[in-house]
Image (cartoon, rainbow, N blue to C red; front, top):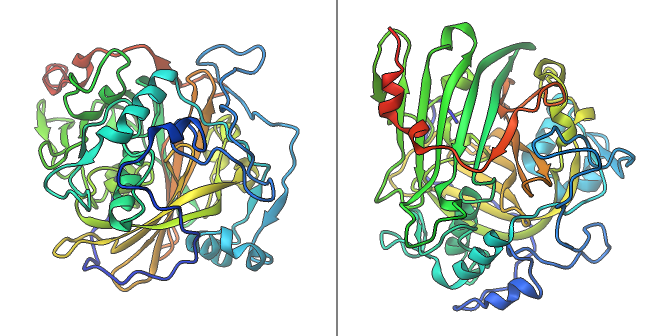
Length: 464
């Protein structure tokens, strides 16, 4: 999570986008739709007209033969060949299924994508499905912005809060989709060894490595709406590299209602021997852990509070996005990084239906990214591709998300994302878990003690 600070500001007009319009949601959504025409998470259960997107039949919930929980899970469809390879020479034939940023990378850098058959592998435990059904009628935005939803949600727990967006109001639906992304399913607790790599002028360098612990109190299987304390996610990141960062750490708490509880962050810095509050770990503050290429609100597609933007749903559209990218994580990070993008031979793209949301700066708010457009996979609600513009309406950055299918969870979860600066021609991959075939490093566990995420405990471990 990180960013840069130069150009800024005011909202720009919405660019035209040719997308299909999702059916309008009635004022009171019907939870029974989640067992009929919609999946338990709110996606369309049926496939598309030509069969290139299949029907959802429950997702992938069984491990391949010979594998156990928390083993590295390799390419799930090793015998498949691409249905099409797209680059600058033929992108015009597929333009309607490519984001503006992806097309710009093809034109400028020779980027290409290999599109494979679509597999709707997304799944979640039954308790998550049960909670989502309750959220249909229970969730709402907070009183500070009951229509635009910039300041959070309430009345939801243990599943995406808005599985059936209210498309009668695009500004309401856009924020609902974004909060679904912020509260998407990645398990209750996991530990992971992360690395962030930047590539500038063709030179690769590791910006940071850490051994992170994540806990999502919102998804506690033993919790409930009545006991939920508002924390969507808590994380502890002690750095393990490079050498100048070893001994430093950061703790972050994210909330479902940032107006009531703003994000809290604490840093332990080398040589100080104490923990400091870190309010700058938010929004478009440049992230040193990405060598300044990305801002904190660019991690995971989008990260943090929605408050600086108005979010408009543009519709739903069939798009090519990275998907089921288990194979990407087999080897070491340096081998995957080319001069301007990750090696296309290692990345799997598929055709999926995506909710399209565009963000423009709310009046009076500031961010180096004046406009953003996100393509959310309908099955997971996670961002698959994001395009971002500066204050002069120049295409500025492209954010690509590479998810990871984990039948042992079950779920399709975040694996890595690359953020490409089209103006400086550098890019960074953030929060990636590499070399999994050598040593599995994304480990799902039943619980992690809250003390791990306590800044007082982090202070007690400080060294001078």
